Image (cartoon, rainbow, N blue to C red; front, side, top):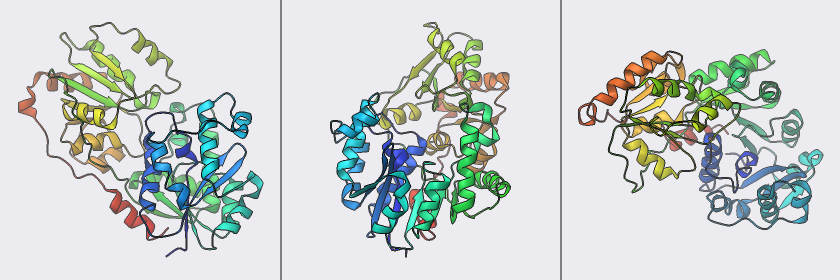
Length: 395
């Protein structure tokens, strides 16, 4: 057993006060929640503009309530105002975190900070892709810690056209640092491992790898009453990779009366054409865009849907279709190897560029009374218990 664990929480705390967590944020939150249940020394590392903060278990115990919005953030302190004057929420978050920290250090003194507070042989866990730099990982390694990194996907390198400008180069640097310094790399699927290992080998070294599927809790619908008319749901950030444009094309071609399409998710980046189409929808378009819903409200809409639609061009894992399948809702998905690995023959697989195959499938489902196509068998989603059993035996 390792003498202590150090969880990098930089990604998670960057979301404090900023609404629902994204998929990667939820993974970091799951790690925090689970590690807090273990009877073992636990620390958290957070990078700010001014340096690193180190929290012990006392401080970490207060983080979940902050993440859930149950505990208010403090008013910004002078350091926060100086470093985040144009981002008051971030300034308040860092003021709160500084009060919880047991120690802090400027960026060049990370190694000294860790040597002073953590025993040699401790385990550093990074699940959010933050601080994957040569300088940071070198400091962690020189402080005597074993480095474990979870790589969610390599989409920025495989399909850079679906990412922000500069993302591919930044991710290449991160993966190079992982190649040079990591002791263990966690992969979420065999498909993701094959792609990641190929890049790591190209960058010089492929660390030991472990496949551990992410846990997907079965969604718990709240008391919301879903619509009675047939409707479809898609869920995810509205970004080019998620291919909302295909669904907009399909709904333009559907005859009236159109079933409703609920687009659940916040608007992302580099997707101005889709945003313009959403903003100009006619009242009879049959499309409603919703964001900021609670998990329970999302689950209620999923549970009543005719089908879940997932036309994504690429995925590292794919939590939403697993959630739909766990509720017994039909899933229409892009023909992606990773979704085949996760859902096997549960889903209907279509070409994400073939509008007419999607149109035909959706039209057929919309015309079939729900009592007839009903719920499919439910899948048993992967669990966090199994994930942590695999990971923490090695990390």
